[in-house]
Amino acid sequence: MKGHIYQKKNKEFAQQKRTTLPLELIIEILSLLPVKSLVRFLYVSKSWFALIINDSYFIKLHLNRSRERTLILVADKPRYFHLVNFSIDDRFGEAMKIKQPLHHLKSTEIVDSCNGLVCIRNYDDDVDEFVIWNPLIRKYKKLPSMPREKAEKLSSDYLAFGYDWVNDDYKVLRFVNFHQQARLECVRDGRRVYSLDVYSLREHSWRIVEEEWPIEEPYSLSGLAIFSNGAFHWVATHRTTDLKKEHVAFDLSTEKFRVHAFQVNSFIRGRVDLVDLGGWLCAVFLDICEVWMMKEYGVSSSWTLLYWVQPAFSNLPPLVFSHEGKEVLTAELVDNKCVELYWYDIKNKTRRIVEIQNMPNGLFLPYTCVGSTVLLLDANSDNYLQ
Image (tube, rainbow, N blue to C red; front, side, top):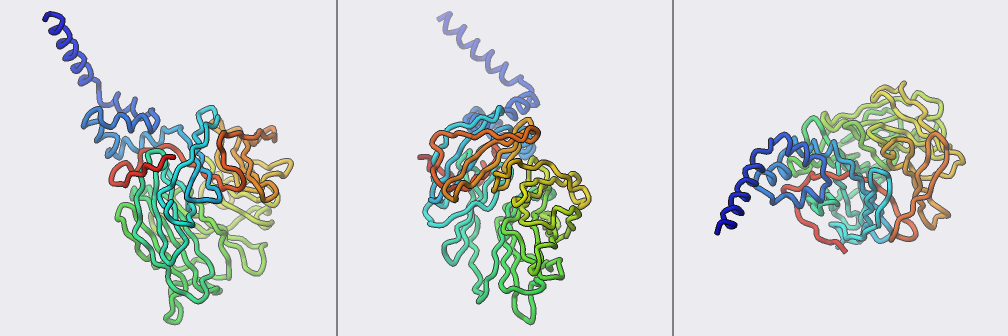
């Protein structure tokens, strides 16, 4: 009997100790934990549940402190993705094969990733299907379907996904050019020439943005739009000569275009892709294996040579910096048969091959995302782990 009383008192004392732990300290500790641990702690108490799943300050704090990174490999059977976690010391775990949310559709692609969320699109039918997916917590949000407008000369289709930090909103952009015209305008002679549609996760709806194309001369855009510093970015190349290029940006908060001129001689040579490396907007010249960084965002004169690859073995854009920033994860297409991943040492100009167990054979496209709890609330569960 006496032992039972002591156990009861010890339990009450432990509960009192837990309740006296300052909220600030709880937030500090939880913000440093990996995503899977936070998911397990959801049901410790109602206050922890509310904090982890619905407190915008905590979600942003955890995201900013997150050191979890995941490599997503998309092979020739896009119903399945391979997820590979890599740690603080840049070591890779075993590849895990999972079904992605649009697994029931034949043709899917990753639009982009941002803050731990991945935007996936199906492009097989007459309707565009999109989902925003958090692969670490297996939650996703299906977007309203977008019917494809019928056009006799559909010339281009550009997609982008990113975060509007001013309005705390995630947005998807679909930019469709119906006809090859010298100047892109929303409407010409009563006929729609291009459409610019934006989806807002906060509003959960698509809407048309009536924004005039900012360049007078006939240009073609690079296929991929890169999200960096609150805007989508493209390289616009003159259609009659590749010696003239412009840097076009679409600001997610104002939903306005702006144009930046390239002011480095290297920018007139060959193919140029844009990437975001550690929050820096970078330009990659795959033909000459140079990577340039915009040191001061929005200032065209601040483009600086970051590194070049010797020998010129890289033919795909870099993916992410190592945690210490001394290496960059890069992919190489080998004889159009397979893809190899390696860390490239920027200073010593050496590389080391990345070996991953159960990595898909043959061709695949690599993407990266960080660990976050974004989308825990008001999303569908995705338990397709296989």
